[in-house]
Length: 158
Image: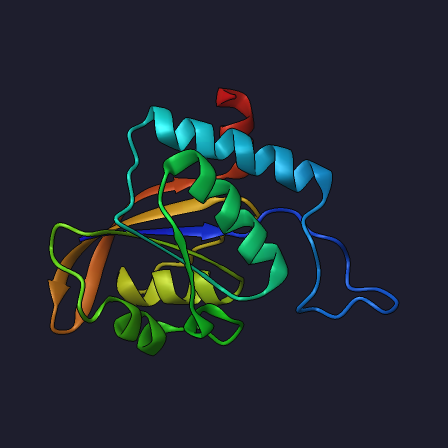
């Protein structure tokens, strides 16, 4: 199984009357996500499942990925802030070894979870960045970091 962790793109600041839940992507965040999605498509990344946090900025990011990659988004409360190793196990419990699962969510949750999956290395997920994990074991769930793509790399390739 392959796991793709895509951190939501650049979003509005949480100021004034905007709640953290309702923060939307900025125009730059939208453009960068479209660009990243096009690059992923050119790399033939084809998730069999696309799960997103219900928070607006993650949902918008996932919808942009969905449009380019041609897979529907499923909103999953497990990906809301507080996501971790246990929630990941819940999300993939019925996935097969041939599945490619893309998750769209938040920090610091993704870095901590990727670290737990890969043996404890420090990982930093930037907004609009992507990590790919190749699952190498299921009991317990563990894997190897194959890609860690910073958003600046997507920009340079676009």
